[in-house]
Structures are given as C-alpha cells and as structure tokens.
Image 1: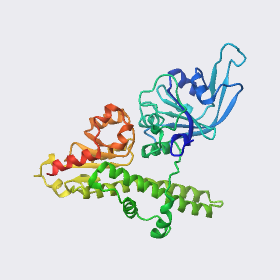
Image 2 (image 1 turned 45 degrees about the vertical axis):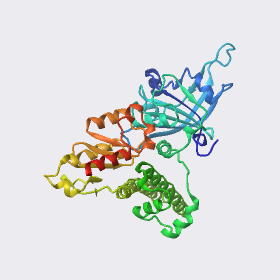
Image 3 (image 1 turned 180 degrees about the horizontal axis):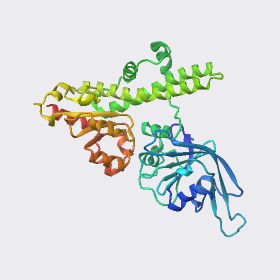
Image 4 (image 1 turned 45 degrees about the horizontal axis):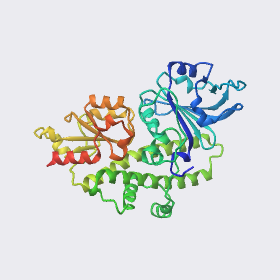
Length: 403
C-alpha cells in the first residue's frame, strides 16, 4: 500500500460492461456471474467458498444520491472436485442496486484493502461511468470481458484533484489534510468557519509562489486544491469537537448536523471557485461584471466586458461573452442557457472530470462551449479534448474581444 495512491484504498479492481444476460442475472434470483476466471487475480483460486462483506452502489447522472445497499458476495469454484477444469463463480444477493442494472451498464468490482468488496454499477454512457473507468485506469473503451488491475501504485494511480472528486462520488473519503496550518486557522478564525471569500483569500495567500499572471490554468488549480485541503483540515477539527459532545438520543439533531455539513461543502465549493476566478481575471486585466442581473431576473456568473455594455443595444454583440461556473455539472449545465439572451454562444467553466460524450455532444448542440482547466482535460476522451477550451484559452479569447 502506497499512501496517496489508489492502493491506499483498493488492492485490485475489475471492470466490464454488463451483457443482456448478466443484467438479467443481476435482477433475477440466480445472482451468479459466470466466466469470471479473470477475477482469480483479485480473489485467488477458490479451494473453498469465500464470503466477503460488500457494499453495493448504483450511480447515474440524473440522481443526486446513489442507490446503496450492504450485503456480501461469495467466491467459489463450482467444479472444485473436478480435477481437469475449474469454473469460478461470484454470487451476490438481491439488492436495490442489482435491480437497477441494465445492459451496457458498467460493472466495477473493487477489492478494498480491508478485504471487503465494493460493487458499483454505473449507468451506460453516463458521466459517472466515464469517471470511474478513468479513475481505475481502464480508459474510455472498455472490453466486453473482465479487465482486472491489481497494480495500483504507479504514477497514473496517484490521487490528485480529479481522483479525489470521483472517489468521493463513490463514497470513499480521501483523508488529505494540512495539519501545519491548523493552529494558524484556529487563531485567525476563532475556531469557526469563516465566510467563503475570506477563506479563499487565506488559501491564496498561503501560496506565495503562485502568480495568476504566469498562467490562469495552473493558478486556478493551485488555488482550488489548496483551499479544499485547508477547508477539510479546519472542518475535521470543528466537526470532531462537535461529535465529541455527541447527539445523545437526538437522531434528528444528528441528521440536521450531517446535512448542514454536506450543504456547507456544496455551497462553499461553487462560491470559492468564483472567488478564485475573479482574482485571476483581475490579475490578467480582464474587464467583467460578476453576477449581474439580465433578462427575467437571471443572474449569470460573469458577463464580459461588463453589464453596462451588455445592456447597450448598440454594443457589438460579438464582443459580449458570458461565463457560467459550476464546480460539478451533471445535468445542471442547462440552467445557464437562459441567463443572457443577447449571447447565443455561451461558455461554462467546470472542474468536473470526464463528462460523458453524450453530455458534451448535447452541449455542442446547445451552443455551449465547455472550459476545463488543462490538468483535468486528460480525464476526457481524445475526441472531446480537441473541442474543450482550457482556462488560458478562454482568457486569450477575452483579450481578443476586449482589445
């Protein structure tokens, strides 16, 4: 196990698209995957029945929360007494997850380092299917049979920003903190969560070697990653203190507190990203208006060069630009299409890794250009990368339009 790599959480991972027969097996009462000899790399040769604790998860793009279940899987050789051949099988119980399975869905079987098993079914051609396939190093073109990876310590398996996002999508909490900043944060913020703008500024100030004028892509990712790590460090301390106090016989109180933690994370992520973008635009000398009011009381994240020119009917519309900002997308990218009627071709900046081709094709048809920092573009298919803009590309476009 190598800290900071996938091997910290998984000892082996297998992947395959579900055939029609396998999807039917998942939903029926037979519940056995046959022809799984490739999984010997993961579970070893079965000299007897082996039962593993398992967590099951179904993921798709149109639901915010996954379908989850706990259970077990059994690994055994159905021809154990046959001296000439083996036939390994993987048995699993009926769950709400297995009932969601359909032909073409991506099946991921992960052997955890604690010897439990994680089984993920990701909807066919979805963004989350693209993400988990990339995360575990299977690429974007998955073969019909099982592909197995048991070496998860190479450089491509180092856990970075995109990896952390996807791991958290599948319920794996990545513990990366900066304890050396904790005392200073507690002193500055009084042991409480500061407002997002102040915390974003603190995170940037801790990166004295990063100058946004030297490169927008690198600066944005450095700011975002540093703030995320610092926030998780402070959050772990504050939440730890609250949990020590406890929620004795107060289930509603615990649920409310848990939801507040999740909501804080979500709202902070979007606001902090906009804060960092604003600082970079200023450093690059870009003129803009943040969250102005347009038609129908819509509020786009950024209008360039500013809302005054946008409202001027005589101003050349080809020099107007709108940028929507979403740290993660799913289907929510459509929300920005109505936010600035004068601008027919809109831009959207996101930190979402590996958005599916189906989604990006829909964006193209909607005249929406995706902007993705260069460090995250490797999570997309080659064909998609030729269409994506980097943040530096977008800055150059703004310079041309504002010249």
